[in-house]
Image 1 (cartoon, protein in one colour):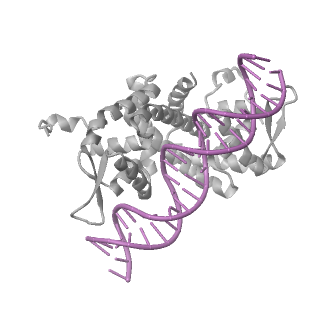
Image 2 (tube, protein in one colour):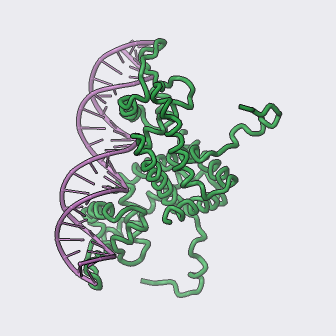
Image 3 (tube, chains in turn red, green, orange, cyan):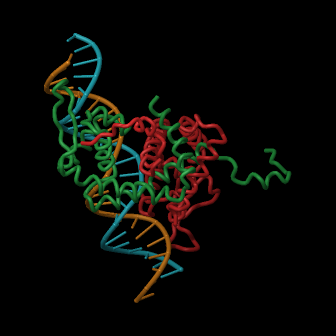
Length: 156
Length: 156
DNA sequence: CGAATATCAGTGACACTGAAATTA
DNA sequence: CTAATTTCAGTGGCACTGATATTC
């Protein structure tokens, strides 16, 4: 096998940010994030995805349809059914048929869900800060902007 | 709660990139990436993680121990066992006991693995470019730098 | 009838923990 | 004996596809 014998090899270790490398970095960071989140949420009896669901419903400020939740979560509707099942069983959310379109189901917070919300948001914030805390506010904004570009295309 | 009543409010619509938002964006982008990768790799008979494993071994340029692979993948060693099982069953990798430390197992490419490598790298590159293609080279470098900071801390 | 909405059923990919075997 | 390396066994999170009712 022909190996490079020139000194140039020493100049080209990490300069190229190929898409492939970015892909690995992205996956790695996401996994790290979920790990921390999982550990902090376990005492509350929620998983990462369940907590995300709860916060999405809370932030909406109004009951959400399953399909809306799927869009906001970026998953297929069927996945939302199972997700809501778990959180509803925990008593934090309830389903109700939409009176205006009886095909639809509206999901809203229960009193218990609202009571737990602060702790859940805290756990999510803590775990996120555990990952993004190393970045300055300006860097976070930069990262946010770049990621938003990636996700915008994802919807297209 | 005192809300800003000046015209400055119009300059600050989405300025706050809270860690929580970044977390969602990161998860979303990672999921999108894996989806595309999964679809492009399916014809080759490999999963996202398996392809990543194959490329890591190929790039190393030498046989790798299971523990090394675990480190490079950012997962626990036990997960590597199952991962290698699959790719070895496909005939792309082989295990061999390290003669210098018989506790260790060295993983290397087979001829078949080397033959498939180009297609696998192509699929990975294509799927990554499908996600990161919207960014300019400078933006990719920026993103790479930021993600590297996050991952560096992840190892600590 | 055709389209939309949600759910049922089954599957797959992937990482984890804890315990055991082998060797240094 | 202690520590390191890998593997065995079992589990959990989570998202997917395809098919089915219900309703618009």
